[in-house]
Image (cartoon, rainbow, N blue to C red; front, top):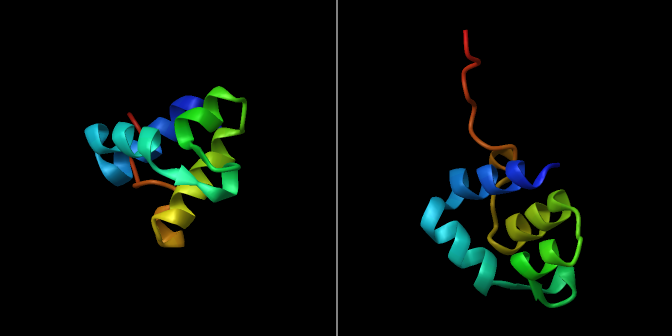
Length: 73
């Protein structure tokens, strides 16, 4: 997963403002008691960070791939 995909998923699920706040404030045990921002800055794969955020926030599995977007024509 690219970093841009991580932020798109975060924004889709939490909104653009809250996603930034959540990424900087929520400490995730799965990531060594670091925030999402600290983990990403430390080189942790964005997919692993996204999964940790989803687990901590009880995001249902059916929403973890983001919302469906119609392809451009």
